Image 1 (spheres, one colour):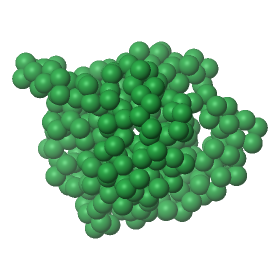
Image 2 (cartoon, rainbow, N blue to C red):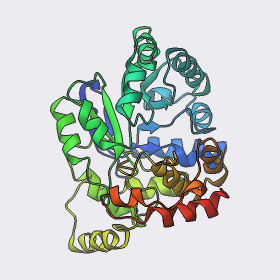
Image 3 (tube, rainbow, N blue to C red):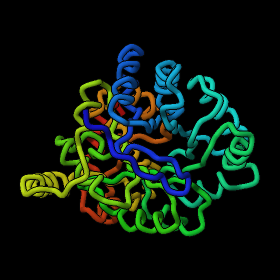
Length: 337
């Protein structure tokens, strides 16, 4: 049985399988299936697990499945907490749910703007709690995740993090320059959304496209079955063949004018709608099979897709020419408002 190749995760020095286990879809499976997934990952050399406080039962399922196997895995989780007290609480909740006394990497989850960054890095911000947890041995390293490549570009030369995690796939390639800058600073690069949130239907080509690049440390496709682990672990670093290249051209033609890259250029919306998040939740509902979780997260937004007044200011600002008001109508139909 071929095992996944290892790469160094930047300045952490941790050796991770170039293909890791993304934990979002674990929410739609069972504890029994999660146990089997972890066993299969061990067999195939997949040793990096990504989860989050926001992924409902994901931490707890992994925590149970890792009993007696904890040392075989590099465990990475994250929190949306922005304040010191909230992050301190979430770290303890993660340790409890994961049934461990240490977490290898703890990340600030989806920091999108310089304003949010200033908040987490303030004297009473979340970063302070992470530093304390690191000093006490509860976490090993600190990372940051974001869907906003421009924001990470703006801080990459001065940020204190050991890892960054951003979307990258055959449709979303903007992060390549960011990755190269990160590698020069020995910051580990974790790639999420390798299948563009389920929009790309050929997982083998999608993963080949990513792991052929040396500036990637690990890519984390979401996996919710043993078969998905088996199929993804077969992908090896090699050049794309002509058939692969033709598929990529085809999928780009199909998605280029309809796929939201979450760049945020459409913001601010006069109605206060967080447009990129609307489309993220739509993807979780429509393509991830996480309808109830997506609905719950959507309900917590301050403004909804149905509040769009079709002013079309967002269309004028979108660098990809998306018909955003029409796409928001679909979001409204899905979520009911």
